[in-house]
Image (cartoon, rainbow, N blue to C red; front, side, top):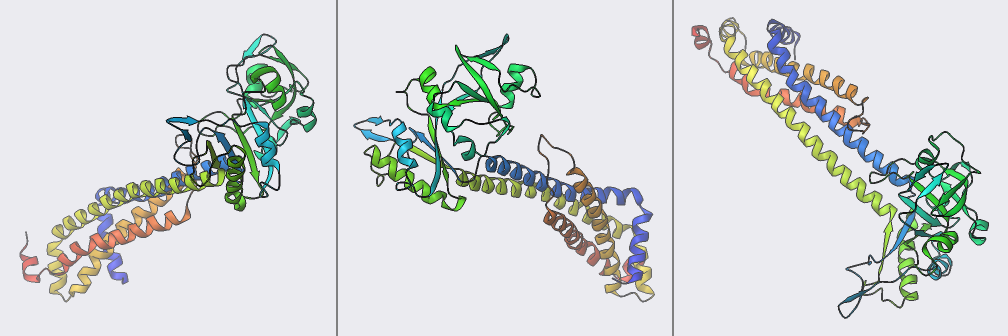
Length: 411
C-alpha cells in the first residue's frame, strides 16, 4: 500500500461521508456483536463455575433411589429402594473402606416446617439436619457465631444455624445479630448459634434460604430415626481423587446393602461436583461458540455491504479510472487504490466495533456480567480486516480491468 493509494482512498471515503459511515456501521455492529456475545458467554461460564466451585470441586453427593446405571435393583418388576442410614455414614467414614475421602455428613430434611419469632413466621425452603463436617465439606463458613459442633450432634442439642435469607425473613433485616435468640420450629424451640456466609442463588434456588440443625435433633423432633437420610455428602481428599472416591463409595454401599456393582444396578446415585463442573464448562463453551457464530453472521453482512458500496464507487468513478489509465496508471495501481479503500472502510468500522464491544462489557446483560475475552478482540478485528480484503477484491479487480477507451466513453 503506497502513500498515493492511501491518499486517494481516504479522499474517496471523505467525499461520501454518509455513505462511508453507513458502510462502516455494518462492520462496527458485526465486530461489536462478536466481542460482546463472546464476553457474555465467557461471563456466564465463569459465573456458573464460581457457583459450582463454591460448593467444593471435591464434593460427592450420594442419593438414594437414583441408580448408578440404568435404574434400581429389581425384584421381579418392582424396583427395590435402599434407605441411607447411620450405618452407611459409619461405613463411608472408615479409611479402610474409602481411603480417598476425608469427611462424611448425613443430610436429613423435613419439608413444610414453619418457624416463628416474635410474631414473624417463615418456612425455609431447605430445613436440614446435618453433621458437624457439613460446613467444611460444602465450603460454607459462618459470618457470625459458629457452625454445629460434634458435641451438638452427640448431645442432640436444640440449636440452629441460619442462612442470610432466613435471618431477613424472621428478623426483618440481614444486618441484625440473631445469635443467642430462640426460634420456634414446628413446636420445637431452637437457639440460633450461627449465621452462614451468603452464597446467593445457584441458578435453581436461593442457597441462603436454609436452616440447619444437628442431624440427631432432626431425627428426635422431626423425621424420626427410622426415616433414613435424604442424601450423604462426602469430601474427597482432592478434586483429582474424586473419581477414585466415587468408586470406593459405590463398592462400600453396594457391599453393605447386598447389591452388585458389576451389573450397575444399585439404588444409589453418586454425583461428583467436578464432573458437574466439567459438563457445565463444556456446555458453556458450546453456547459461547454458537453466540460467536451468530455475531460472525453480522460481519458477513457487513462485508457484503462493503462490496456493494465499492461496486457503486467503481461505477461512479469510471471516467476517473479511464483518465488515470490514459496517463499511465497500471492495473495494479487502480486495483490497489480501490482495495485500500475497501480495507480502510472495514478497518475503521472494525476499530469502532472494538471500542463499542469493550464498552459493552462494563454493563450487566440479563443479570450476567460479561467478561472480556481478549482473543475475541483480535479475532473480530482480524476478521473485519480480512472481510474488507476479501469483499474488496472483486470491485477492485473490476476497476483495474476496465479498458481506458471504454472508461473514457462511460457517461
